[in-house]
Image (cartoon, rainbow, N blue to C red; front, side, top):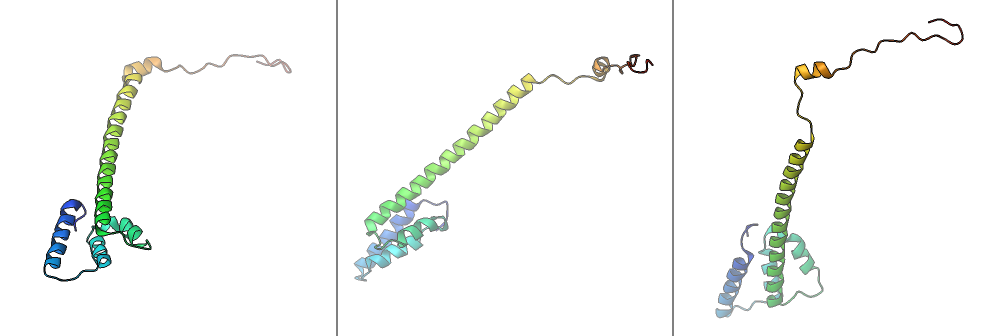
Length: 134
């Protein structure tokens, strides 16, 4: 199964297939069907798959279906909230840049720099206290 596809459609097709097998009187073990359903999930469900398989008992198919759909929806909501955060951060940075530009001084021209530069400091003639030299 593809990573970005709709899990609900995949589960619906899976259960249609299982229903057809049961119509043909092919007996399926519920645990085997649960494992088949878990392994039909995309690769990004690996942690979810391991968490379900590590339990002492596998959940029933209906419970597993609900848990898979809940997990998929929570991942979608998390990705949407991350995207919202990215956009918010982008606009916040733009706002900060605009405020920073407003606070900074405009660039000076070459003539203004010449006027604003300090002239070299002339040394004063100071008399030494010990020897009296200037």
